Length: 144
Image (cartoon, rainbow, N blue to C red; front, side):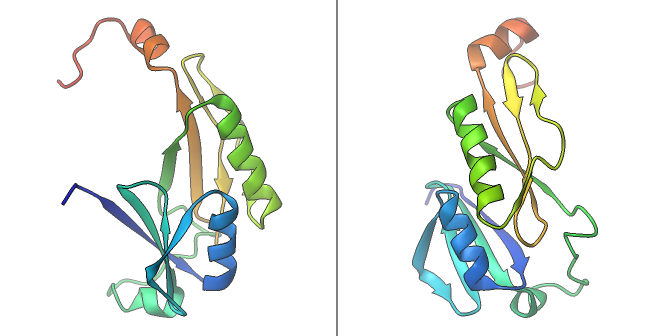
């Protein structure tokens, strides 16, 4: 089995959140979805598990954060172009989220924007031109 990541996010409304992520291009995996959860696939290695807050709370002894009041994580999503970054932020804003919660960041070799989903979780879609990034950072090894 390849290494994968399943990001569990609490939601007040599974149906509303499922529709939001589908509007952004995620695909619902029906095998792992029900009235309490939606498995939203981003890639072969990344799935968001959208869990109703009450169900999410059964997985942790800690209080469940209110993402509208505090940032619990920043989720960066790589995309294939600057236009794709713009498109996903626009789709987020049009589908019940909040787009451009901070200024866009343009470093020449990397471009990113940010949005919140309906529950306040922060996403930072980004595009990086690897050739330009390598030129900007010089000839450094991939790993220290």
